[in-house]
Length: 350
Ligand SMILES: Cc1ncc(COP(=O)(O)O)c(/C=C/C(=O)C(=O)O)c1O
Image (cartoon, rainbow, N blue to C red):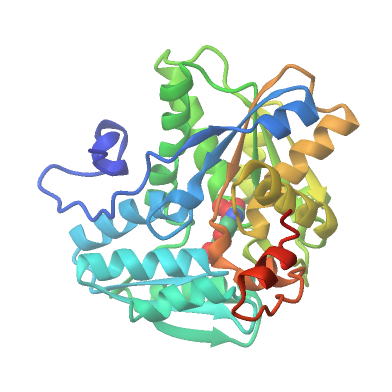
């Protein structure tokens, strides 16, 4: 039985003996071959399907560590700013730990599924009349003034330590690191964590060569591509609608040390990758997650991704998080009378 991220990689986690480990069985997610993407790019493409985590996104890897740490510190609750998935995960793990949870979310810009999760777990939800960056600033100030609550955003290093587990799993499964690792980048905690994880395996001689980190941002929310914060980030991929990444330095380190790169993908590229994943690979992800595959396709066509490369694309969140986006292009449902002939006709069965 998979023991969860902390027990699976205990010697690499900042956890002390005797601490209560707060886990929902996160981690150990599929590393799935992607035959259509491999054929389309001339590479060997694998998807790290992190939407398969307990609350449906990669955030659980960091949240198990952050909430375990907060509980050990005697905190009464957790607080976070979120575009949605962090709040869903914080609410679930806080509940598991018997702690309270408060979340600050940008007004009107949070996908339905994520809000439902925070509500279901009984989190206090404050809609801030601003964007994610405003929420994060508020969360930092609030937890500084009222230390009774732990700030569990990815500025919290225990989040990064937990999220590095994805890199460990990939190396353990492949017996090596991929040549290139593609992932969507918003607040840049995840790319920071992956690079930390690959470097740890390199230092321990468990891999010979770390991957080049390819980070992809939505064109309307691409501060790391432009080299400056974006005041009014805009994208349909609301999870990465972030203009001032908190882990800017970590993202730069990952790019520079790995000979990697950042690039922007348009909402159209994101949506076409989003549809390709569900329609051809059978993997349903939320739009932000598809940015890594949009970037893979862009890199294959603009020559920045050499043919024959072994590539892992992390798809970070399950498609159920954002049902509205899936229904954007849904055809009108056909109404059929209770008649087998009508069904056969509607399905054009011969
Ligand atoms: C599905 C999905 N894909 C990619 C990202 C970007 O990861 P980072 O670059 O580590 O921020 C997020 C981030 C979400 C939040 O920042 C939040 O939930 O507050 C996400 O939910």
